[in-house]
Length: 307
Image 1: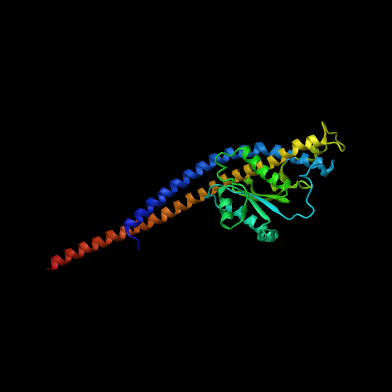
Image 2: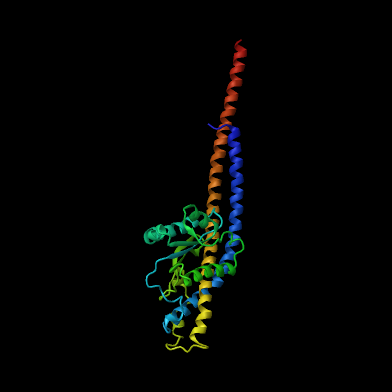
């Protein structure tokens, strides 16, 4: 049985841990509120520009823009994997890495073995995870969530777009956690480049009420493009790609804060349960020690009287 000193030391240690996890929960909750505001402000524009791109594709020749045209025999693949820079967020990071590894093992194992698979890892956890396993990493986007900005999304999108146009890879996918609510996220693997012929809908996008049949009826069947299709695509397509990455980063950031808040809340609760158990053990051990001392004193007194 542990001594009273050991039990006191453990009680102090667990109490300090509980204070730390409670503080981390409060910090995550504050960050989550800001992250939710950002993602709720970004989603409508991102969803609408995605809808517009899909509608444009049905009225134009997709060969007018190279990012619309799929390669005849796609041979090289790039995965943009978005994780966090820090841990202590439950299964948040492992969910993304497991989804990416599952896709690699099922579809791109031959690409990986032959050096035709490339990864852009946004976030320190994903970068370190895949680097240790010998994957080909492109760029370094560690530490970006400390000061997350649209510039980061622009840089990531540019890496994917430039590599596609230069023939370094033929397909690009984005793997991330989509924010559903505080306690749950959707694991998403979204086609990025070439821009898919049909609009890709995440679970949140499918349930979004802003994209209704009434809105779709406002569009004419034969639109007129001003100043012209080429000029519109040159402006709209890069903006579309940038905003898809930006939305994925914001979704991941909000999901991270929600996962961390839940994880720290569970840790605080577990620490409280452990404290109760340790204090109970401490009181029992202290009672046993007092009882033993009383027995020894009584026995000594009886021995003196007998002597």
